Length: 368
Picture 1 (cartoon, rainbow, N blue to C red):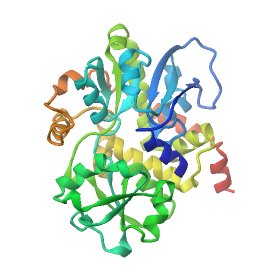
Picture 2: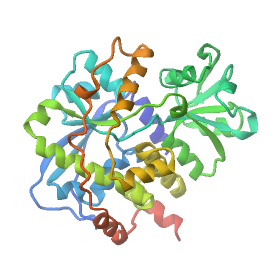
Picture 3: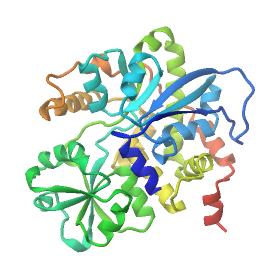
C-alpha cells in the first residue's frame, strides 16, 4: 500500500499515462455481453488505489453496466489530466478545486464539477501521542513528516488558517517510510489525509489527528465533466453520475465489500486487510462528512454527492485568499447539482451487498 500512496502523490509531478479498462461486471464478477456505451475517465492517481473506491465499488457490483456504461480509465500521473479532459481526450476526470479552477482560470473553461466526491477538507496532520504535538499551535517550529517535501502547497494554507507561522516549519520527505518516521519519533507530526490516516489506524497505529476542515473548511475532489461532452450527452452523464452515487452509498454501507472489490481487482496493492478497510472508512468520511452523524444524515436524506453551494463559494474564496486564483470564479458556472439524484434504491443495493461473495487473496488470508 505504501508504494501506492507514494504513486498517488508523486502523480502531481511524475509519471506517464497508461490506459486500462473497467469492464462491466455483475455482482458475481461475470462480464456482460450487452452493448455498452464507453466513456473515458482520466485519473491523476495510480489506478491501483483504494482511493478510487467511489468508482470501483459501483463497477464491481455492476452499477455502471446497469446504466449501459463501460468505463475506460486513463491513468495520467504527470499533472496534465485537466488538459486531457478539456481537450476531449477524456470525458470525465476527478481532481481538486485548486486543480480544476486554476485550469479554468488559465483558459480551460469547458470543465464542470457534477458530483461532490469529497465534501470536506480531507487533509490534516497525524501526530504521535508520545511526542507532545497535539494541537495546531504546537506544530509551529517543528519538522513535519511527508511523502514529499512539496506538500507545503497543500498543507501550509491549513497551518496559516490555524495561526501557525509557516516559515517556522519544515517538511521532511520520507517517501514510503513516513509511517515509520512518525512511529519512531523522527518527526512528531505527519502531513496526511483521511483515507491514509484511517488506513494507519487499521494497521494499528494509535495516532491523533488534527483535521484541516476544522480551520479551513472547504470541499475537495469532485467528478468533473467536459462540458462539450455534457452538452451532447446529458442523459448519459446523469446515468454515469447515478452509478457514482450508488457506488458512494456502497462505500458507506459496507466498507469490507468495497475493500475486497478493489483488492480483487488490484492484488498488487500492499496493505493488510484491516488497513484496507480503514482506508475505505476514511474515504467515506471524506465523501459524506467527518462527523459520523453528518454522514448518517446525508445518507438518510439521500444527499450523496450534492454540493452545499455556500461551501463551494467559501472554497473558491480560500483559493483567492491563498493566491491560487487572482479573482473568484462563479460557483454556479462551474459546480452544479443538476445531475445528482435522490432516486437511489438503498434496499436493492443492500441486497446486492448481502449476496456478495468475498474473493480477494488478502481477505481470504486474513480470515483463515
